[in-house]
Image (cartoon, rainbow, N blue to C red; front, top):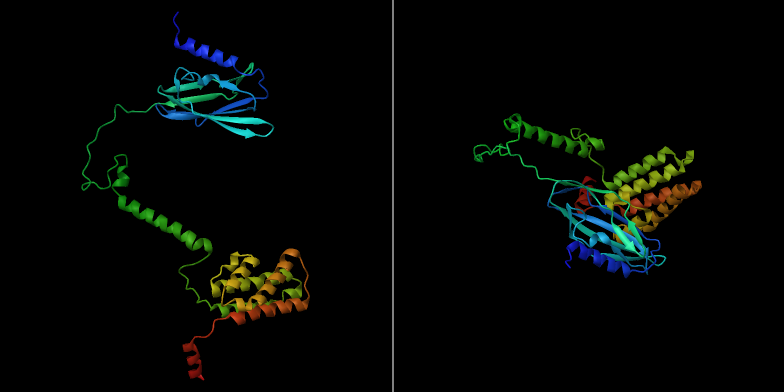
Length: 325
């Protein structure tokens, strides 16, 4: 009696099925491809996922053979990766590697999973298109041209109107690149690079001038307490940024105080700043209403912080003042 390869595989499958438990339970199976296209001779992944009860054992029939169909081979059957789930259940993942050498479109069979007395099928319809390598038999073979003779004609597919006027195209690309740079560097920020930039005041003078302007606006006197404390803290944030190099504009009040305590020149006035930031946060975020005295005190503490942390005059500056007197 002669046994063929297929008869041996069928016998093995039958023996495996007899050894499985008789209860399938609530088992599900799904399958998906990495892509619907693959170049002939290349490999592609098929991912199979089974969810079942812990005590149940099953068998994927498709993986007993070496092919899924006559044109698609199983290059690597991979190993099962089991993950424990809740409710005494398991998830079994298996990554299969497929390979095909004949171009065409093939519908892959459903993945069969035998568990107990049931045979489950994956519901996904998987279609794989195997693309061939296109070769132009009428293509002309062209000699390589010396690089020194035609430095910008190495690629024959470039049209002549581009290769003959490469310098104009290069200038255009450089002009376009500069335009994009100028847009993000200046125009988007509302900056005119051709307009003379007014020299900015030193941090101390700028802050004191801004505080004076804020006081003249009478915001809290007109019921605009939030606007008042927002402007007051913004002045202090900009001053801290310029005076100590601390990016206070982008920080919370807590982050600012952490940096101020670590700064030797600023920590001497930390209490003044902390009091201003605390009351400002209550007004801005907790809708607290302040008294007129509270607003005046907060303003004076802001002034005190700027005054106490302003840079000390350099020796040459002091000598210049004495000479002027």
